[in-house]
Structure formats: C-alpha cells, structure tokens
Amino acid sequence: MAKKDTLELAATGRRKTSIARVRMVAGSGIITVNGLEVNDYFQTAMQRELLKKPFITADVVGKFDVIASVKGGGKSGQCGAVVHGVARALAGSDEELRDVLKKAGFITRDARVKERKKPGQPGARKRFQFSKR
Image 1 (cartoon, rainbow, N blue to C red):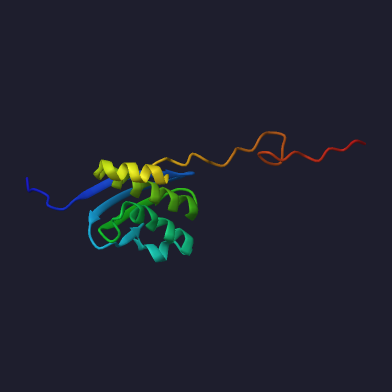
Image 2: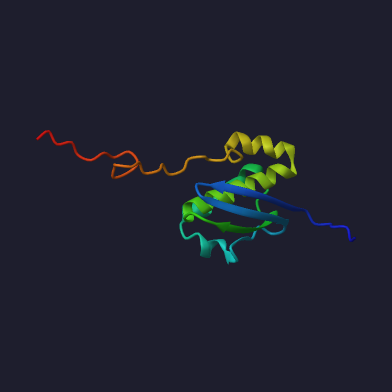
C-alpha cells in the first residue's frame, strides 16, 4: 500500500434539511460544490462570504481545496451545511483549531428547522380570524 503524502480531511455538515459531504485536500483554495465552481453554485455574495469565514477564523486561507456534495433544502441551508462540514473537517485535523472554531460558533449544528403546520390552522402559528357573530 502506497503512503499518502497529502493531507485529506472529510466531514459531514447539516443545516435545516440540507446535508453536505465535504472532502478537503491540501491545495490552493478552490471550492467546488456539486461539481460546480462556488461562484456558479452560490449566486449571492453573502453566501460566498459565509463559506470563507471558517478558513479566515482558522487562519488557513488558500491552503485547502474543498469538494462538497450537497443534497436537500435550498441554497441558504446548503451553504450553511457546507460551512458546518468545512468547520468540522478543520476541527478534526487540529485540536487547537477546534477551540477557535467552536468559540466562533462554526462547530455547533444550527438545529433551527421549519415548524410543522398544525391541523385546523392555516399555518404553523397563524389562526383563523375570530368572528364574534
């Protein structure tokens, strides 16, 4: 068996109903999501900036290439899932990075999901208008 000289990190990230499988390899900072360049997949500047934040926090900008596969949810949830996966992969590589990323809030899974619609109501919280007469 040949010895690997390149560092490869892998993790799973989740947000809302999205699940991201993230692989990170030592490289030049190229991010690929579902086979597309990050600028083609995530159109908004806010989402692209959010993807860079774990790297900036861990001070490893441009040191890893990211290959992510994302399923489920919308673009916002998928972006959050990729960020969570990247942070978990970085945390798995170095214990000191884990503390920094945890303090910044990237390791904690954001458990907020859409509340279900209740029977006999038009929505999750909304009630039909009360009529006195």
